[in-house]
Length: 164
Image 1 (tube, one colour):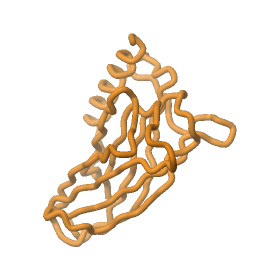
Image 2 (cartoon, rainbow, N blue to C red):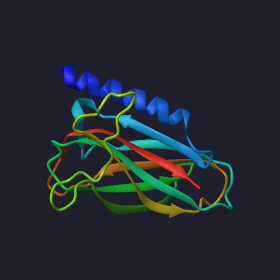
Image 3 (cartoon, rainbow, N blue to C red):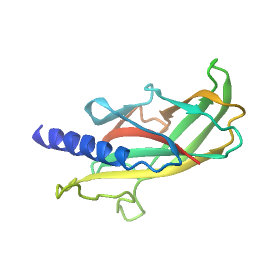
Image 4 (cartoon, rainbow, N blue to C red):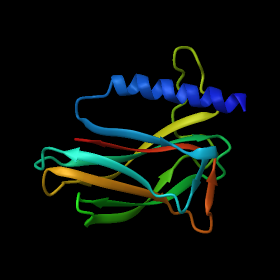
């Protein structure tokens, strides 16, 4: 229980620290902390992004914070992009590798202010380059899509980053 609190505090502080140093080309970098470190297959995560410039091509990336107790090498996920009226603009499926074939985490485990994350890893992987058709607000929706795995344990947070 204490370990979970330390992880959540470290995650909050790192999010605060990194959001303050956000690069100028990033228009969204939002993470959702999951209850009980579980990502359920029926748990649709929604992220809203405001696009001002439709002449740019944007990079969409998935962020995952997981522990060493995550049981799989990867995660498959479905994603969609909707306009402000709820019209589907694009949908797809991607695989995100979290561990190499020897079980070594592919994400970072940097310390923050001398506090180690222990077995907590952060990974970010681009999943789509996309040119929004016009300025406006868009929703990016993400859901885990691991076959026959209704619950993924060991996932602390999931997020989306959009930059140009």
